[in-house]
Image (tube, rainbow, N blue to C red; front, side):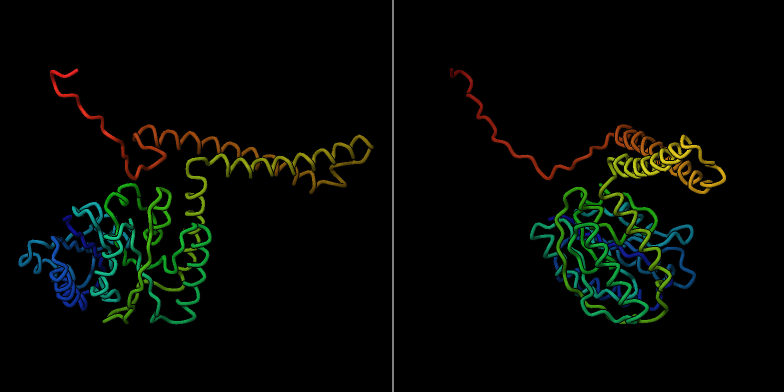
Length: 325
């Protein structure tokens, strides 16, 4: 039976840490599997690290990673994933808005053969205008773009097979989109309803300003999912469109010039637009070519493959006993 690794990024959560640890430990003991708990302190300024340092002295299954400065939740999760030794990795928040008692339901989906079990905050305790509506819109757009049928991309409460995380590098704030990134490699994903209680204290680190960051991330994910291994297909189309429209404009102006019209005086803005479109189109072509070169360098220098194998089966040939024809 594989080890469970519970990864919990925290930042100024001293009010919740001890209660979270007690409840989580009780749940893990009932599951009756070997486990480890990894807290990642993202440069807290309260007593969070002090409390965790004391807990480490009493529990050999607990590990605390302290980051040098506040890198953000994605970086903290990545640090925890790198330290995890388990074959199944479960991430959750450290503010008790994720109930440890929901953990077995996520684990049940992994045991059923799924690669990712993602929490779904079906009944959210958030402000309707500032959080609920923007979240629903972003989740709907993300589901349409990625083709991953999830209601809640934003929650951290997820369970993963460790091999899935090895294929994913996290940057920026892409932790919420791990299922979409994992779909590149054919990961099987299930959704599990989870509770969403109110925070036990402190203020949320998320606000309406994060919505714009999410929209930018959605555009990034769209590009990665569709054009990651063929960037020329994206930039080339833009370049072709720019050069085509610009060429048509300049061709039209060339005909006008042959007819004796004064192009600069009568069609100056149109001439400028046509030239600019062709120049932009050529830049898009150049960007696409550079992207193709970079992608080949990325895959070939690291020995990475553009595919992922789930399993290989074959019938083994029976060996002929020695001495028999």
